[in-house]
Image (tube, rainbow over all chains, first blue to last red; front, side, top):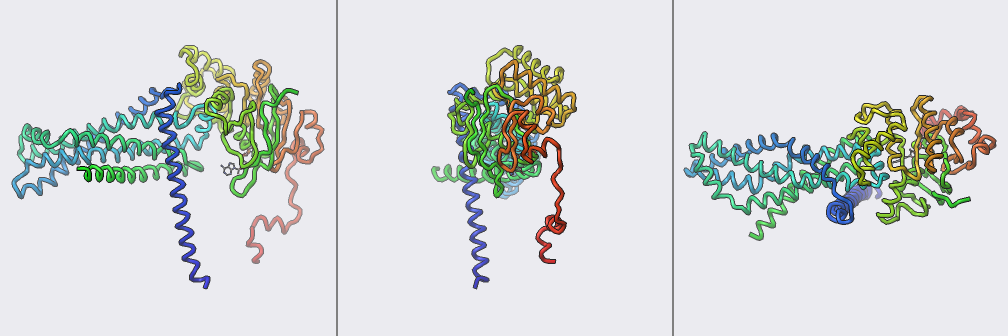
Amino acid sequence: MGYCVKPLAQITIVFGRRLLTFFVHLARIAKFFRDTLYWLLLAPWRGRSVRWGATVVQMVRMGVDSLPIVAVITFFVGLIIAMQSAYQLQRFGATIYVADLVGVSITRELGPLITAILLAGRSGSAIAAEIGTMKVGEELDALQTMALNPVGFLVVPRTLAMAIVLPCLTVLADLFGILGGLVLGAVSLDIPVITYINETTQAILLKDFLTGLTKSVIFAVIIVQVGAYQGFSVEGGAQGVGKATTTAVVTSIFLIILADLIFTALLFSTG
Amino acid sequence: MSKAIIQIRDLHTRYGEHEILKGITLDIFPNETFVILGRSGCGKSTLMRHMIGLQKPDQGSVFVKGIDLLSAGEKEREQMLKKIGVLFQGSALFNSMTIGDNVALPLREHTRLEKSTVDIMTRLKLDLVGLSGFETFMPAQLSGGMRKRAALARALTMDPDILFCDEPSAGLDPIVAVGIDHLILKLKKAFKMTIVIVTHELASVFLIADRIALLHDGHVVFLGDKAAFKKDGNPVVRQFIERLPDSEPLDGSKYLQTLIGDSFHGI
Ligand SMILES: Nc1ncnc2c1ncn2[C@@H]1O[C@H](COP(=O)(O)OP(=O)(O)OP(=O)(O)O)[C@@H](O)[C@H]1O
Ligand SMILES: [Mg+2]
């Protein structure tokens, strides 16, 4: 009898434990986010200034250093979309609409998304690794005993930096994506540059551009929160840091796409 | 006798199944140099982490200047921590900053001093631990002993009332180690600091300690001054002073069993 019950009980136990750790994680992330908001928004009113110097350093590391890769990748993506849509539109002799398709899909969707995923891989992992190493080396403890809150000291500058840098990079990504489409249009579809630009500016609404930027601010918060949270939860040496780094990247990419889905669905349903 | 500056009451800590501290009660008084002795892994660092409010005990409480750091309000806790210096066992220097920045950090974050003043104070502290001229070095460029001294300089930056040192002289050559001991004596005399030290070095214990606590198996098995420590009859104390190894396991088959574990029963 016990023979048939056992596997079922075991599954229940394993599943229950998974569910429990999931909720524990969720609760801790919520608390972590609340701490960040406190140190970002409330603490400055109580005489603790935000570390602007550190914020600028982070902005350089996250932003300036990512400029080339973001530009190159979104240029290629613009090219790819242009080719894919030209392939469809050629049949209707409507290749001029390549400009519309590239412009709208880049500004509304791909610009913010690709930039965020790139930064999750580049900076999200770096944040997790840096903070995780500090945890292992008792540096976070040292901060605390110096009356410096690790969240205020480390997470707030990074959050601010990312929230400033990611929208800026997204603008750049939008431009280079459109440029990719433009190059294809001019070189292989024989669309005059001026015509392409006019078509694009007609197609893109300011609203599209701004929703893209709003999304990128949300993605910025996700990248830093997940990276920092993973860093703070590191246990046990270099191996733990490696694990945290991987988890940070995977989790933040997943959450970025989930947030994108929710955001887009909301916009879609409200027209 | 004056009122205790640190009060530890019935402190219990466990990591999973293991109970590391099994009811510690201690009073540490102002301006004394208090040494915590004990074998490796007996929970000295853990006890120190409790005293500086980094770890929540499973039971019992710690009061520093009458305040429980874990339940104190943020302002109060901050005020308190600014007057506490901590030297961690692994130094815990910020690896992304130079030695100079490490030492200057508390001043930069907590005071509005001019940059030149901060620089002078940083140089003074580094000079105190014999590291003048190393401001621009990164922690990774220093030896373990130098890192330890840099960390001591950092712990002293805010001129703390209470200094906690976890094995300040472990890994130092005997000359520098004595230098650290004399520095501690100097701090005690000049600044009226309360100093709590975890150490293994008996020579340094007998030089600097006012009182000694010996931890063993989660309890304080000895508490008193140097003279009482030297004369104490407790076998654990004697083992420490006379540097005796653990007694050899007498029962050969039992020893064998501990080596090969439970599989022995099956044979
Ligand atoms: N985070 C942790 N998780 C599980 N066990 C731990 C943890 N930290 C310490 N321990 C255990 O607690 C015990 C006491 O550790 P502690 O670092 O306080 O020892 P210690 O007396 O400072 O030793 P040493 O003289 O070697 O520094 C050890 O047996 C250790 O295995
Ligand atoms: Mg220790």
